Length: 271
Image 1: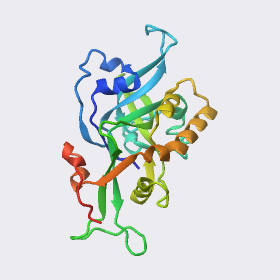
Image 2 (image 1 turned 90 degrees about the horizontal axis):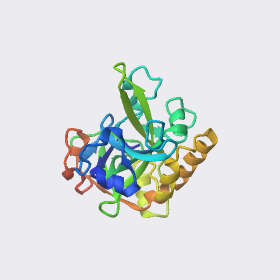
Image 3 (image 1 turned 30 degrees about the vertical axis):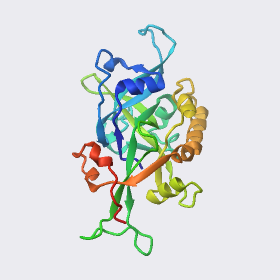
Image 4 (image 1 turned 180 degrees about the horizontal axis):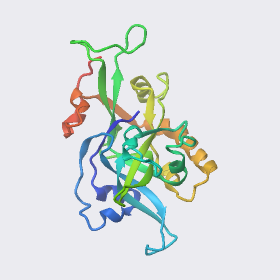
């Protein structure tokens, strides 16, 4: 499961990397600044890239527009009575996303890519029977790790979903979720996949450049096409993850109020 991540890239860098333009709320703003968030948690505002078919109010009706928007992390479907439902929908299980009411419309019609520098995951301390143990004064129950690309400055593009929800005031809330899948086997051939398999039982699904193009395509909107896309990104998730690396980080990341580059600094793992 991905419940915390890092995004410390400027809007301009993200726009250039995927050939996008600012969405309407970002137009006319300074996109050159780096909006750093070293401890992104659910309900935070995060950048997402999506494609939509231009409407009559756009300069080129019918054209496919690739735009960067800012969304709330935690999906709020259009039928929700209250946006608080999104607090528990920051991740979407890829195994059930096509049929689950919370996500089934978005996976057909509103797919996006969520950029990150990397993400945090917590490894549980296990007892002799293989079950998680409780923390003691000298032995914490969990050790946080930072998972990220091998090359500094590289971007992870998570497979995401987005939704628009109309508030009682009439304004619109854009929200998003990140797809997850089973973690690699601890017995995988690639050492980093072994590490990821031992780290947690879930893995956020990252896109390569080819799958990113197809995942964003708004014309692929039938259920069969959605099923095919989900199967494809699931099948290729390990190939992308095999290019990552990970290291232990300090416990400070557990407090969302802590938000500095020091959070990703390597430390000696406690177990």
